[in-house]
Length: 157
Image 1 (cartoon, helix red, strand yellow):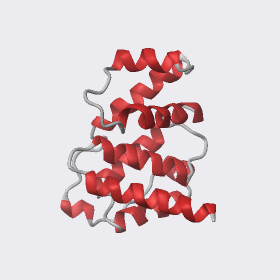
Image 2 (tube, rainbow, N blue to C red):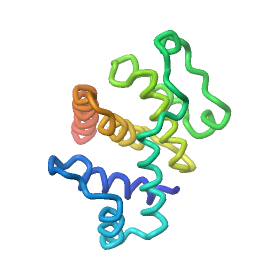
Image 3 (cartoon, rainbow, N blue to C red):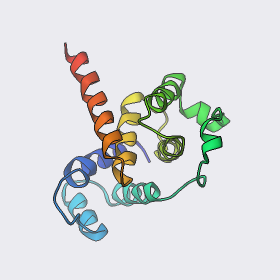
Image 4 (cartoon, rainbow, N blue to C red):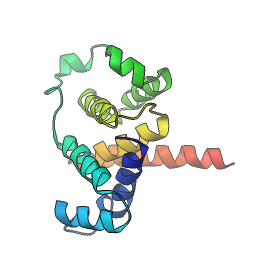
């Protein structure tokens, strides 16, 4: 997946996932509408696969004891997630926006983007998507959303 897939995911999230409308469109309807919006069939398929990974638990449940452990990044993760990205994930965990288990899902989904470089903006979107996809995370999602828009507001001044 390249940046165009992340662009597609952001488009999908903004237009379909965060909408208060119920019910959400099924997979085939999404596929058809995204292709009609100009996204390629391959990118649409990859984005839908990426979304399927949100519902999975890539490393199993992270226990409370593990939640207090230090996270050691693999060599591949170190190559793709620079110091700023790793620090930002730790920052979100310290703010209690992300739990240890959610951090693992975020890392898994970031690595699944298959982008050459991953930046903080991409991390923010993936965190929002992960929190949105998990029931009972409305408060954490709202805090993250506030954090994203607060930082954007400061950048505009």
